[in-house]
Length: 338
Image (cartoon, rainbow, N blue to C red):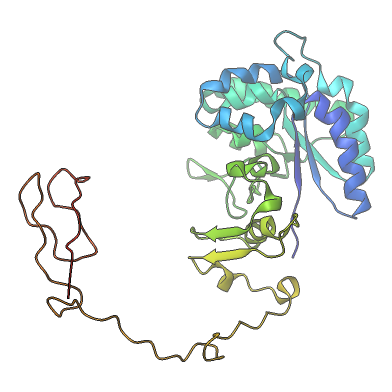
């Protein structure tokens, strides 16, 4: 199984400090990746305007933004001047290319693009893409072949411009597989390779769970990707003090679609029944006895009327709620003697 790694580099600090570390890690494991760079001013601090968007504050808490980005980065473009990433980090970007990694354009100003492009006109969109394209050529001495939009935010003009500006392919969207965009009935001759899996920052601290102590994994929605399936299962395989197993509850039969003997290993023989020592169990299970009073199963005895509405309760002993709007009015179950 093969996957393609895409690294979107948003900030000056991420370029200067994070990219060299990733290069060393990837080279040590003989792994490839595509680095997409923000090439203009770092206005990360202006992202504070997103605090009222649904889910933004939750993401901030989950991903420890202050610890990962640093206070200086979070003030860039507000209380501190916005550094020019392309000017200050050109050497790091060329280092990625010189180490055999694919490089491309993420944005000119990643915060501005994410916040404005959806409603922008063609002139604004062209200006932003031209700025990043010219800076890329200035740094690398050749035209950019790859475009990967910041935050997967695009507009119809941007899709058309990926072809006009000479990109060979793009990764501007999320989806399940490659596709060719069509705008107003015309094919855009720049294939899209969507992001198909959750990003790292989306997985960090998901639901407040520390992956090491996960003991139960519940699959309740369809999973269409082998890689995503393995990521989910992998959250249970990490070792933790006192943890020597974990349990998968698969309500959608996902494991039937992702059989991978090389990765799964040999299946463990199921434990036999403790009584008959067989699997599946062949013990004879007697049905529960009928009601002592009416002799029926389930019980059909009349119940005490509801003290609020006066209506008879349901006859099934498993329900002791009346049918009136007072759904929380409960009354004592019938006492059976005999």
